[in-house]
Image (tube, rainbow, N blue to C red; front, side):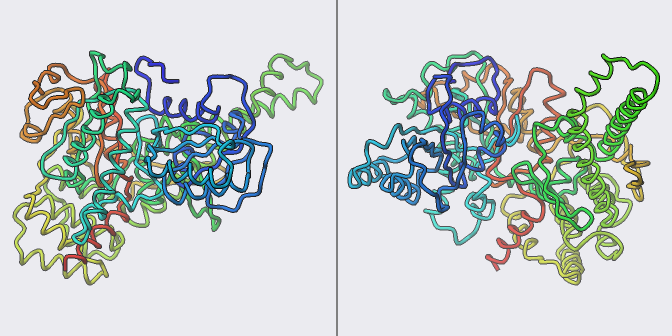
Amino acid sequence: WYQRRVRADVRTRQIEALKHMLNLNSSKTDSVWKILVFDEYGRDIIAPLLTIKELRECGVTLNLLIKDKRDPIPDVPVVYFVMPTQENISQIGQDCKNQLYEKFYINFITAVSRQLLEDLAQSTIESDSVAKVGKIFDQYLSFCMLEQNLFTVSAYDAKACSYHALNRPDAKDADIDKCISTITDSIFSLFVTLRELPVIRCPKGNAAEIVAEKLEKKMRDARRDPKSELFKDQGITSFQRPLLVILDRNVDICSTLHHTWTYQALIHDLYNLYLNRCQMDIDGKIKNYDLGANDPFWSKNKGKPFPEVADAVHVELEDCRAAEQEIKRLKDVMGGDALADNDQIASTVSSLPELMEKKKRVDMHINIATSLSDCIRARSLDKFFEVEEEILSKSTLKESVLDIIKNTDVGTPDDKLRLFIIYYLSTSDLPDSELVVYKDALQELGCDISCIDYLTKLKQISNMNVVAPTTLNSSSGSYSSMSNMFQYVKASSKFMMEGVKNLVVGHRKLPVTRTVDCLAELKQSPYTDDFLTLDPKIFRKTDNMLSVMKNTFSDIFVFVVGGGNYAEYQNLMTYAEQHPGKRIFYGSSELMDSKNFLDQLCKLGSAQA
């Protein structure tokens, strides 16, 4: 699987690596039945990539968590896929001692230390079970590939690398170092999987710089090590190398708090997508929905404005109804005197499973869209989106932020707090007397305003102001009124949304996208002129670092330290679509929804009080 492919995507490479691992790291095509044992990290890496059916095709008869009680199955081999921790090493040693399985194939998600490896060896020697251990591998797969162009460090232990963990005032050096190392190992694993060495760009003076320098050293050391095969002759001499842009979350606070409008981002904001799954209350029943690459409707529409998605759902539903009518017509023909077209009947019968699967997906998206529409109307989210767009585009506000905060008919306290934070960070000259008025109004609603205190200090330190953005395309125009636009009719399996075509007229380039545009196209900009350039291929720092910057970049990897969001991801995907030939991959230490980020900001504010 290590053979280089032309422009292969990361997700495909990671799936190939996992299947190779499940084939006992062998090139043999005959699959052996086996048990798969993973920890929470391994589970979350596999979950978005391989279904139970696909695991079964790889010979996995049973998959279990390492910490759960497991019965002996002595005539079947086992594949472990775990982080190299002392707890996991001890458990594997105990499993060997108890001879739970026929043969042990141990795969560590990231590189195991010499000390832990010696501990495992000592344990198996003491229990006389050395012969049970088949192979031990470092897989370098410590990243969650949620989509073809989207990845995170770890969904399981996101708090360990969160914005709060990196910025809390009482953080110990050991905790920060562990967090930085986890992020570095994750990005390193991604490029080992690709067998590529990127050119690294990052701003100075924040966590992004620390990660970038540690990553560059790790890559350079791996390439220099004569025993290491991680980057040996695998595309590193390619004329077109990838660009890795590492940024800090503080580059843009607003995008994570901004009320969004696209289908995927709305679901994450309102229902928290976790490993491509969301949970909703539908008619009093809790429903779990999988939203992944196997759903063609989702793949096609996830980045579109919600009203367009509602229309698309209706079209899909009408197609299903037309197919059902055709089946009913053929059934009537078969039951009557008329001669039926045998070929047409056979074709219709063979398409029934596909039709039923499509109808199931359509029903799921009808339920999701209906629930989203209910939330939008109940909280007047269209109004918040409109006002925030006016703020961020430096347009004249149709209604003051204070009036919206005091309006009891719209939004929740958190909606109003998010609106104010965006207004506050986008305003450079808000007098202290006015700030007090806003804080008092928010406190009356029961908002935790400690996050404002934190952002005040952050704003003072970084002089963080949002510049009026450019647009992603040539379209122009103002945002029309969107009140009462979310109307739907659901009856007899019919779903419609009316009058919502003009929800969004133009697309803004978010700060992350503007940064990527400047760096990938080698444009001069005050945003990026002082960015560091690091190249792990250059062994001596005195070498000409600018020599690698003569050509623009086609493959760009963006990583946000401190957490990312779906709005940035979709903004970058839109940019890539408008620049044919460019591929952009977006990653972060975690994917945050607005509530998660607000909670972290409030904790930071309370800690500094």
